[in-house]
Image (cartoon, rainbow, N blue to C red; front, side, top):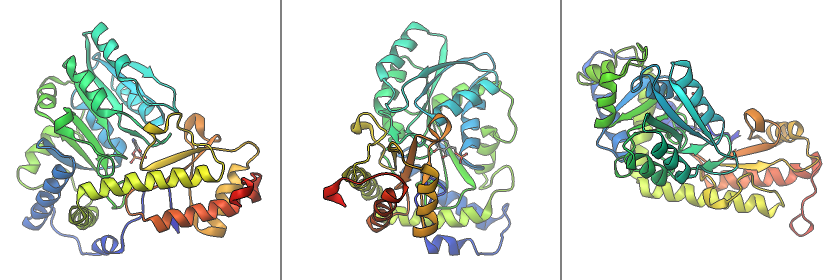
Amino acid sequence: MNLRIPGPTPVPPEVLQAMAKQMINHRGPEFAEIIGDITARLKRLFQTENDLYILTSSGTGAMEAAVVNFFSPGDRVLVASIGAFGDRFAAIAKAFGAEVEKLDFPWDSAVDPDIVEARLKADPSIKGVMVTHNETSTGVTNDLPAIAAAIRKHDRLVVVDAISSVGAIDLRTDEWGCDVVVTCSQKSWMAPPGLAMISVSPRAWEAHANAKMPRYYWDISAAKRYLDIGQTPWTPAVSVFYALQVSLAHIEEQGLANILRHHEELGRYTREGLKAMGLELFVKDERCASNVVTAVKNPEGMDLKAFLRKLRVEHGVVLAAGQAKLSSSIFRIAHLGYVSKEDIDDALSAIRIVLPQVGFSLPKARV
Ligand SMILES: Cc1ncc(COP(=O)(O)O)c(C=O)c1O
């Protein structure tokens, strides 16, 4: 199968094999060695000297940890949303009693940092801003350095959902002043789902000291206490640790700069290939197009369900539909993690074959 959804992403064979190893004592020296190694590698890839913790959960668990550890019920927070995952951050903050102000931007566009700045300037009571770096539901990447700079200018916490970006799209945690950054194993990291990661700046630790939202499983004070002795507070997904150790070693061998460039090239290549078929990208301004997932407007008259089914059943290519209000108006093709130009060629060829069978005529010159 050519799995072209934005997570779980394909996992290299040697990473899968690593998971066949027997269990070990998660309170013993072998595990301490593994968690120490993985944490150090992840910090380098997050481009940070901040603390970093590995949680056993999917990405949403780390988003919840990014809320409950740094805020109190009644705290005002700003959530800049351009899609389903921005909306999720707002929903989590609301569920834990934050007073959420949502800044909604059109889903085909990026956050306007000037609008964020204006809101912070107007309201000194806002304690922090949540933002999605790469909005997986729409294929739009925000200008995180500009947004973070706007937030830092007003000295509020910068909380970033980098779940589908870090490790594939440049994210300079320290240089850009990101206080809390979250991601998870099944995205750029070429590992199965099961682990999430959260980085915590000294400013975020200060906020944590006074944060009163209810928390237990996600308490980063517990994560810190345990990491100091090479453990996690609760039983970790040991097999995914095995996998991640192997995949992170590969990533570091290839070099972060090369991996970022690879995603940049694949993003451009995918967009060009789709446009050449006469398809229209969902993103309004291609300068903020995501390099890890491309969203395409469903052409007029195309049967989306038949399109996705034919691709999967007849060509072994798995694409994603849209999410939330875009569920029937876009489809998405991911180019994230363990993916080559050949995988994209294979997906594009299949799309080219299937489109005319489901109600879309390709431009004559390209057929
Ligand atoms: C940007 C973003 N945020 C949050 C999530 C949620 O992560 P999970 O499904 O692992 O909980 C995803 C998953 O696709 C994502 O891409």
